Length: 502
Ligand SMILES: Cc1cc2nc3c(=O)[nH]c(=O)nc-3n(C[C@H](O)[C@H](O)[C@H](O)COP(=O)(O)OP(=O)(O)OC[C@H]3O[C@@H](n4cnc5c(N)ncnc54)[C@H](O)[C@@H]3O)c2cc1C
Image 1 (cartoon, rainbow, N blue to C red):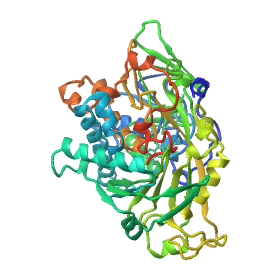
Image 2: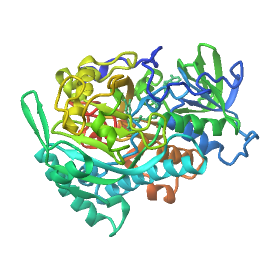
Image 3: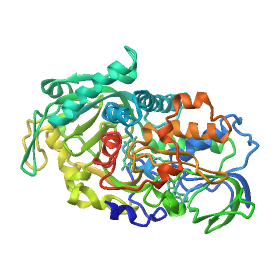
Image 4: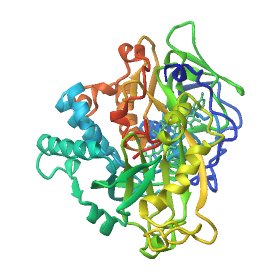
């Protein structure tokens, strides 16, 4: 792993695998608000994923639509708009805070663990509420989720963590709302097979399930919708324009950003570059490490289709990893399709080769084979190729099971926390990066916090809800990866062992 973390991070690659969500690409995919780049601006945001878009929104939200604010803001995007992790993720708005709560509590203290869990919950609520308020057509679907657990240790840990959260949060607080389900209930209510087969000769024993509030969304549609709100308030979006280097000007206070289309002078730079950060900010080499995740969109088997759209989202958790699955909600395009990602540890050397790479132009064939065959195991019944037709899966759709398959690049920090704030030792240099596989649960609130800091409101109120552990600082920048990624934060919220978000 240490060697993989040293792999030189590159700019986003050309011709990435198109994701399910980008089919078809949004009409702003190749937007260039002005034909040429401006020579001088106030702020440059690098990256047009949910982080860049949410930062732009926070900077522009007081501007009336159709008007232009007092600051010139340019957003540079290396490829098409929202073509990084946000445009290629699983769309799970799921905190699974109980999976990291105890480790956060032992590392940072219970109040900080409570703060992080609350931020995650608030982030999910804020995204779905924003989509509703602004009528963004993104299949926003707040719903419950179920974690199906196939490992004794994980099952025991879940009970301990939920018990601790029930003590730490006031009674009835939705952040600590969890319900346990027996294997029989998992089968009857959530249609999973009691017998999940074997993996490499190991039987996958079903211990039970944990359900709680979560949701799903098309992160791509949400973010392109958000970008359009920013464009109507004066944002200058320049797609297919990578920032290739950042130069501090002689005054030590302003910057020049180089691109293949010319240079731009600016007072403030904001990195919203997530897994690609080290390509233009080399101090982050080995500090924010890319990890490739893989997702498929599949048609449910005939028996599952008969049950209508599955009302909850799912994670399937086993000893070293997990998968996560989002049924496309009722009324959405392709309703009922199952978007399932993960499978990282099923690849050679438990997916080691996926760390450090920025190559989202291909898929990992081992993960691919595993993901294509795993749903029939979880739901029971083969279908298509002559499996047990009586299982909950049934026969495959005549057009086949796999509709789309793609990869995307996440950004991991050694301690598993985002890096947000002013880059220490610099003027006018800001960042909000490194969201593990958990960005739909973190990016919105981190973007809000960053703009509070930029606008001089880094005060008690902000410290009341924004975790100290998420701030970028010299000490965190000196940490390097040793051994595997930080798993407790990443399972299943992040994908250290899954390859996306649980
Ligand atoms: C396969 C996969 C599945 C996932 N599933 C989930 C999920 O279900 N739920 C969840 O919560 N999270 C999930 N995640 C994680 C989540 O998608 C990310 O944490 C989140 O999208 C990060 O958003 P961002 O805007 O910070 O980064 P990104 O969306 O990666 O955006 C960064 C942008 O910066 C651009 N860029 C980078 N460098 C430059 C440069 N030098 N010049 C110009 N532009 C540049 C990139 O092209 C990119 O568009 C998943 C991630 C992946 C890859």
